[in-house]
Image 1 (cartoon, rainbow, N blue to C red):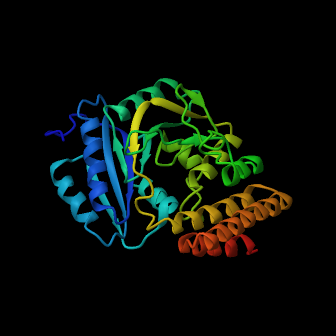
Image 2: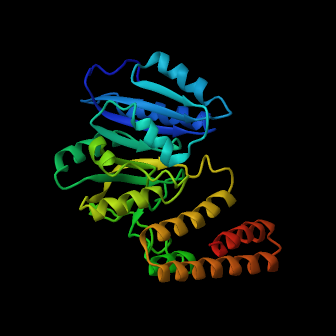
Amino acid sequence: MPSNNSPHTIIELSIIVLSYNTAALTKQTVESILTSLKSARFGYEIIIFDNASRDKSVEFVKAIAKKYSQVKIVAHNENLGFSKGNNVALKSALGEYVLFLNSDIIVQDDAISKLFDYYKLNQKSVHFVGGKLFNKDGTLQPSGGPFYSLPIIFGALFAKGDHWGFSRQSPDRITQIDWVSGACILTTKKIFSTLHGFDEKIFMYMDEIDLLYRAKKMNYRTYFYPYAPFIHLGSASSEGKTYPIIQVYKGFLYFYKKHHSSLAISLLRGMLQLKALIAIWVGKLTKNQYLTETYAKALKIAQMD
């Protein structure tokens, strides 16, 4: 970790990191940001917005903030979730540009500077940009893709769409794309505010897709920038595998109720119910209690009006 603070007095970039019971990971993320930006040619700040963690997240960040003036901690007294947490955190941001990072991101090399330089050079045509995400073992983590039309959802649910690059992708060249992962997304505060931020009715999952769907309708363009590498550990604050699946079900249904027709919603419900029924059947056959219980909950959500 660098031993000195940034010499730049004007803050151009605000980096927002939400934390929730990820003390060690949040500390690792902050340290990787500081290391990545040790030779930065621009002023920046790191805002850690803590969603009422019950662990030592706040204490860890406060200790770092004593050494580095770029680091700020905003400790909230309740868990606001991803969308509202980021929206509230942005109110404290001083930079013209804002980079949203998950608390389980490890910045590689000078990835932030590369991403930021690309954005500033191309901001007349590029309005949102995401970097290239990798798993902890160095394998690719698809982190962008097309919007979730019904065929895309079908492919994701029943044909391993993520595996084949049908529903999620990781391009090797700069590519205009429908959405990039909210784990790493850069834009301007002005554009984000024009879109009224993330939809706060979405607690977690589908938030970035809803944001970028609304952005595209306003002719804002999103790009995938593969030359800025980040490790994303994934689902670090999701408390098990069941919770993400339930939130994805809720996210799909909310997104379709908000943006699509009643016929499309009915077809989506049918696909989600079929996926849940198949998973329950497989769970019973293999005596997999996790599958059975998780998708029984998911089925109830898909059946609710």
